[in-house]
Length: 246
Image 1 (spheres, rainbow, N blue to C red):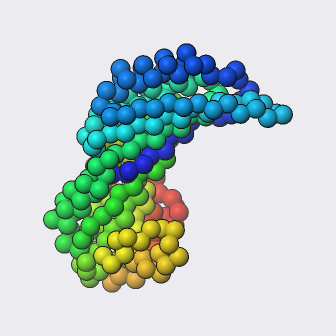
Image 2: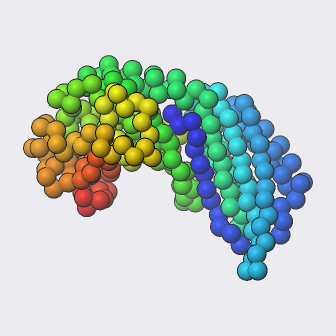
Image 3: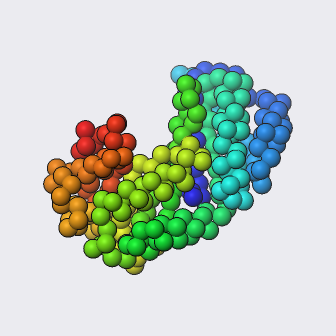
């Protein structure tokens, strides 16, 4: 699971500079409420322009493993809320590093490979946390899926994968939103690489998908709606579809 997660909240506004006393109080609160974190640092910045003055608070957390991160999710949200309450209008950014991300990906990949024969491995990245004052925070998940055999890949297999990954993400308030399908040879390829798009596997070209409305850019199953218009599979809940599945 994601080696790095960004949490953003608040907006710039004219406000007094955050004091050292406030930072010390937040650090004490963080140490008390997020004891599973191996390391927590809190830094602030104050920017003044002709229009206004604003504060930025940066919180960096390091966890030894996914289990500790999952157990601390609500405490992270509470810390975010405490800082937001004490420094209204501040832009708050929290990075969460899971130092065992590679091991977690290997574990998840082994589980998927055991249940879905076409899969050889995965890399799961978490994206931006979104804070909803009416509910808990959630983060988006992007799956890099490596296939051994395209012929064994089908909508049923895609559903199996989405279900397993979504269950994994739920522990940190996550939602699976997109999947990149790649050959095993592309395991070191990242999205910014100029050859990424031509290397990615477009599922609408796979025979097993052609009976599921793929020509319209959408594959629908009982649980999910998959926008497969491009090489990126955008994942939506069947009751709240978007993109080509709208």
